[in-house]
Length: 370
Image 1 (cartoon, rainbow, N blue to C red):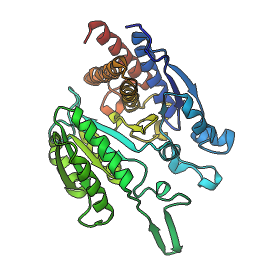
Image 2 (cartoon, one colour):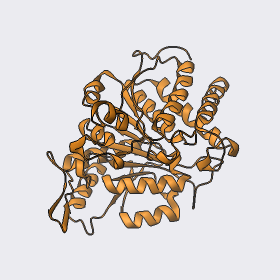
Image 3 (cartoon, helix red, strand yellow):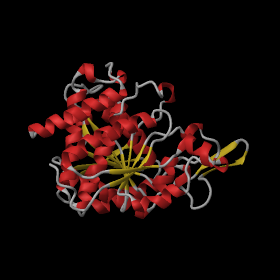
Image 4 (spheres, rainbow, N blue to C red):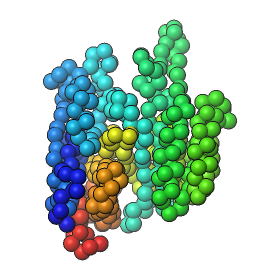
């Protein structure tokens, strides 16, 4: 497995972020280096500062040159950021995650929730579902209006917020969900909404999903109200396959599903659009454990695997798809051994050692042809 990728070397832009971001990013790159040695892809990396490091150097947490650089790369790896602790936007405190999603039109946030053998789910049956979350509109204040924030205060005692739902946004996220379901064994899509109350916004969303569903007769389709969906995930998440929903509902339900599957620390996530994709851990920057070699890098490692899979589909390169699956199998092997787990999973292994174990597992699985 040493032939280079048929479309040339793969260039990745790496943004390490805040808190545990640099640690779990370095751990992820260690695993990618091992996979690169197996397959010979020719990975190369460029690093640009974001977050507090960029704020100190350049007066902003998200320098403009990052967006300008994106066309030169095949994809991005984004470490967690501490955006809640940033100064106001007018003082340079921009959320890098939101900026990338909005300005690169990364309309689909793909968040799998998968139980792993040897590590029991928190409750109920094992999970194998994917939440396909609309990523560019909804209740998020920085994605509601062309200019200005979607939140405002007409008086000191009145706060208001806009929710933006469009036919274009709803249709394309529905299409992404059905395309994914069509390739999965169960071929099922569940649309989650609150149209019983938000009749106009979620009504439009459901109209679009139903229209897309008519073009996929081979895919089973159902609808669930969001509060009932939360209860059903706790009761028996095994009944769900691909879940499509709006931005905020998807954000909340994906954290719930990931925790039910075992831990939010295992939750991979990919933000993707038409032209690029960003691998991003589903969790936050955990500044309280930063620099202590305690962080679980599984989420970002899994997210990087998703990025390789996305690139494999885009390039029609089966080796990239195989590499993504190899990383996932290596994660499963390591997590299945209690003493190999990080402290958040009940183990004692540090961040760097965990990454080495995953890299070793990838090499062993490749050598065995497993």
